[in-house]
Image: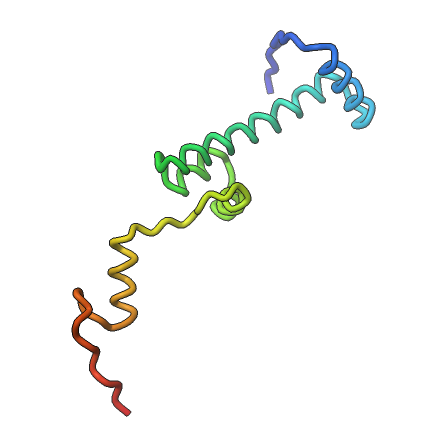
Length: 116
């Protein structure tokens, strides 16, 4: 894998955090920075996917694909943030409820009695 050099400006506290992580993980500062960046990018993509999904801009499947996670992981992330994952348009909900209850559209007729 070809690595490129990127220059970033960090505050003193951020450098201190990198140094502490470098000691904890026993690796180079560059490796710690790459890991932190990778985790941060993953978290940002998940947040962006959830934001787009919540605004109904993308489907749950596309949100999961964008974030690079499974649909199950996306559903868990949505639930953790209070975002309903499975949406059901009111019209479809009413239609399916009628089908399940055996009532035709309008709901004035009763279904035939069950045969024994």
